[in-house]
Length: 177
Ligand SMILES: Nc1nc2c(ncn2[C@@H]2O[C@H](COP(=O)(O)OP(=O)(O)OP(=O)(O)O)[C@@H](O)[C@H]2O)c(=O)[nH]1
Ligand SMILES: [Mg+2]
Image (cartoon, rainbow, N blue to C red):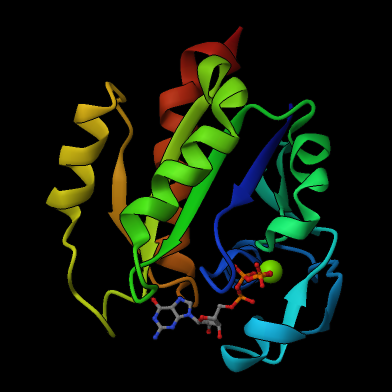
C-alpha cells in the first residue's frame, strides 16, 4: 500500500524541516539561496519540492511531498497534489497574520481539500503563543470546515508523527478499501 501526502504552507512554516524529521530516507530537497524578502528570514527556500518516505511497516509507505512556500512557485502546488490523498497545512504562528495565511492556503487548495483530508500544524508557538489553537478552530468552524489543528515543532519527529497519524486515521476508511 502506497500513499501520497502533501505538505504546504507559507515560507518558513517548517515544511522541509517536518519532512526531514519524519522521513526514513534522506530528503530530496530543492533548496536555493533565498532572495528578496525571504532572505531576512532564512538562508534557503524550497523552489520545486521536497520528497521523503515514511515506512509504516508491512510494506506500507507514505510518500511525502513538500511544496515551495513562495507564491511565485505556486505553479508547483497543483502539480504536487496530483494523486495525493491528504494535505498537511503548516502555519508559522510567528508570521504577521497566520489566520490570513490559513485562509489563503485553504482557498488555494480548495479543490483538493474538497475531495481529501486535511490537518493543520501550527509551528513556532514557542516563539509566539498567540493566536492560540482555539482561535484557529473558531475560524475553521466559521468556514464550515472540520479540520484538526495541532501545535507542532517541525524539528520534533514525535510532533510531526502525531500530525501524520491524525491525517492517516481520518483517511483510514478510504485507505482500507
Ligand atoms: N522555534 C521554532 N522553530 C521552528 C519550529 N518549527 C520549525 N522551526 C524552524 O523554522 C525553520 C523552517 O524552515 P523550513 O523547514 O525551510 O521551512 P519551509 O516551510 O520549508 O519554507 P520554504 O521552503 O521557504 O517555503 C527552520 O529553521 C526550523 O528549524 C518551531 O516550532 N519552533
Ligand atoms: Mg521548504
